[in-house]
Length: 574
Image (cartoon, rainbow, N blue to C red; front, side, top):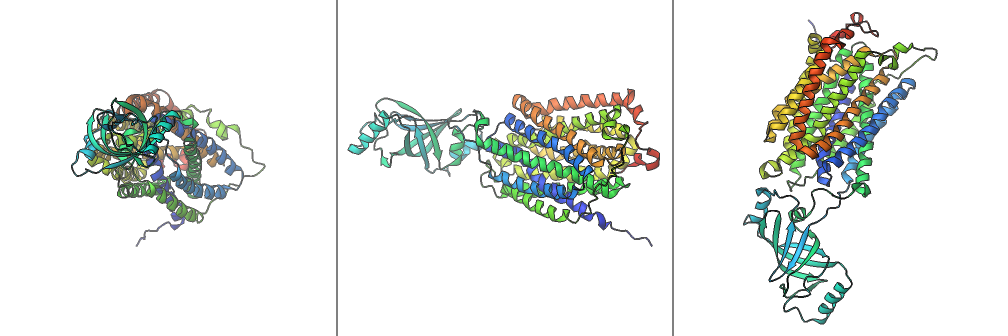
């Protein structure tokens, strides 16, 4: 009677995949919306991500080369794993950009505060905050005005100290600090008008709030109601962010996070392939646990963010950073249990050029393989960095959807993993065997094109849940093809270097996606960006098919590195 054996030797490796991406998932998926809430524009965020990924891009091949030469793989892996969680947690303390307020205090027959919203499209979601009869409370605002509008007021208080204070302040051209109590009055286009009920200067009340001649003054304001402050604030800082310490704090945090994240992922893949040896067809059975970790933590973090956010517009992202740190600690503990195989190379061994990493790039099919990786990662980067930003904008004017948008975004990640990635990691070997590597590359590009187009035409963010099932072919199958083929063509004793270079190319595509995507999004909007990306992906799919028919496919049948028949590599099941 046969018994099913459980391979416990790879259990620490599977848990490593689970905890690593379980900790990174909340950070990766919510960093774009965190940056938006901090006040950054789309182009600025894209530029910051490009810098962060470019630096991490340089680190991958260097670390890969080092661990191929020296037995320091475990030391690097443990250090990078722990550093990921710590750096991710510290992003929680990055301050917001300074907001520029747009308000005006007007004294005439009556005194009122005019708040100018930067957008003309304030929705019923915002209006109901004040037009609802239940919200009939008085709002306290502290104003910092350029001049005193009450100098010409009718029937001002006759207290000598008050009159002297008002005149001295004006003559000295100082900013006037005015404490007021206001009540919402009316909304016309992008102007919100609040009636001033009381006003004080230096704790001295102004007895009359009417002036003989209309007097206006621009003010900075700070109100007890967050919504009023947001109306008067620019949605993103409009000056040069490069002069602000807040930007450099964020950029530095992102650089360190993605450097250690890329290093961890690269070493993790190489360690797994080392442990599997000739059974690299089982790579997907281990890698799929990263999808489980990503899916669970995405759903949990999305729900927790909504649960702990009393303000549906300004979310509390503390659960994201807490999950990231906790997962990193668990990953560090588990990683110590992995039997890491250090590289041992004889000093007398000198490989021929054609059997080195450099020899790979003499082959046309290898060059086309790396180009395909850049293109796929470019589109994947667009989705990672801008899909949630796009969904946030979609519900900006819908109160009911905005309240639970983070839960919805977490569910989409769960569907990506459990409905898309997980099954295709297991089916990838059979698909590759039936279609071949090049056709799998073309298929992933084609599905990516359809996926991008569907993003551009939806009006309800809930439809994204169904679209994300396509992540199985457009991402998981592509990853399986990439890792299986990389292992197949790898020269002897060069695995870590090759995986590091693969990471270099992937991060290159990621940096291009974040940089170009940010400017395209800002110029054409989310729907326009996804539509244009759909067209480009479709064109690249057609180009890949033509290359398969007329050029590269024939060369793939004559590889020089590894005898396919002896390793049965064409049957690789990831």
